[in-house]
Image (tube, rainbow, N blue to C red):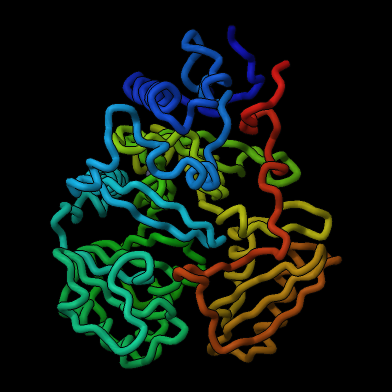
Length: 457
Ligand SMILES: [Zn+2]
């Protein structure tokens, strides 16, 4: 007997080639019928007589709580032995701590991760030109995410070299970086001459401000890849002041690999070689139908079947003409709008993304960094760092900009600070509210994922 989910599938309206559709079907079958964590989902499957996107739309979303509940072994497809894989060194365990402090133990299979990264290079002309897989790469991110952490004393260059990689910082909080440490980073970039510089945008922005202020010369790599956090327009501007290299934003997660890559024309394209993305539009009053959330289904990871994984991010579809870069397959985004936990609300209850806050504040002259916290329905507290402009002038412009965004009922409180530290493990949070919104309540119900035990019609 098949159950009608009565859920619409956004993917059904898009054109995909038959190979892609086959891989979606394989991912669905492997997860639902050969992976223990999804056993209870089978009751929601309308059946093989339905198109794969319709079947996917009828299923629940996979959350980080599900990942924790089933553990890494719950997502290993039948026929694989996790204990044996760990013993042989074929796989590893990687613990992620999200910004909400929720820890997930991920089963890590390096060849699959590398393949998803290599797939992103095909989506950007600059990456196609310089990325070979054996290229020199400097990395500037929190050493708590990747690299070699050391908060007391400093490490030598050799201690931060790993194969073709050089990790530029052993310190996880850029707000405490010394001038000497940043001088060292610049010297190392010049000496190492990386082909690609991969960076957390807020970290690279901090270094870029130092380079600009001191008038230093810095080697520009073939490509700067921004990852780990959603770049603020302020950070991008600071980076572009000193680096002439093209910049591409890469979007993914430890759990689901690489999901979107920015092309040379500035749009974000789905990495269709390694994942399917279900788009869940918000209701119109919250910015839908081009704004919404995503669920990611991964392809061909022999050690891990992820189906409709909720990455917790909000994206905006591109509505323009086909992208001049020529990429046509899969979803094209104009922006990643931040995480659902970074959503705030207007005093009247409409959702406001971190991206919307950032676009409005990027126009404020002299603003270097900020962090907005909504503390009550109509109260917004902003800490900010000003440079080359008086704090009171910057505060006034921040106030006006945010009143324009949240409306005249909004109470905006501004506080100048010397620096803003990232949250552990090293990500800046540009906006958030004390009462995180129920992200499910924002969705257009026609597309919302089903619950496991919801009543059929
Ligand atoms: Zn493009």
